[in-house]
Length: 343
Image (tube, rainbow, N blue to C red):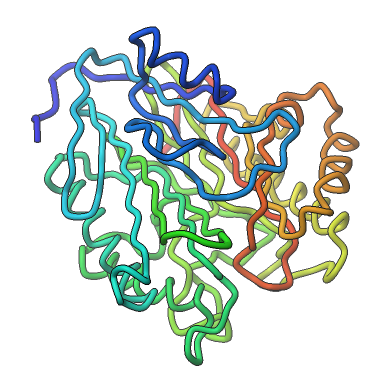
């Protein structure tokens, strides 16, 4: 791959409707990359989340732009990527039926090639990861499939000498009803600053009752994206206090608890530098286990933040299973604010 230029590149992200996202390409202004929600496959710079969109405004995309003029695309093993020499967005899709391997093996293989991609690109710092796996809560031959995924993922982190505990990147892992194991990843030139939630046990410190290997992610991460801006990437957040699920069977209370956790993460992030973030300004993806709960979840968000808040107006709602079968809703998000980080 091409070596990094001496001049830096800054990154920005905007949320657009699918027609507006695709129109960029027709005008000859295809962006660096995009992560699409409900978009069709086959757009080279827009890997897709294979989940049903529940939002009234339909399919959306988070579109990433870079300031560097040159963008290179390629593959490393099973990983597809685009880079400007400073930032890299990659996508991996592995179908179990085709590959004839178990989920732990596929997760290990996916992350092995993810790290090979970063090593070859010379862009070594993971900023954010999105994971989507079919039937996340199903039994996988004596071990829940999410726990199988955690086995393979953490093993790859350890083999690559990557931070699997303190310093792990922000991430989410959701269940889709069909399709391939899908991993999307953003990497950049500087290590992000991990952020934990004081209301929760760090996921990588969960007790063994949650599986033989703990989930490998930080609750959030702060990244200097250039041009005087700091990005806050918030991992999948749900109704968990300590390490236990709370408000079993009550989607409204789970949503309220999730908002309290998001606010706790934002408060922790605001203490790490001069950039100041707010809950109302988040661009979020809301994963709902039962589509019939969508309006109840939307009502809680609008009641807490107001119908005109950017978070409520731009939220993308997707049908997805959460990593625990007793969780009904999960929210992941990102936002950007001007400022600097403190070590």
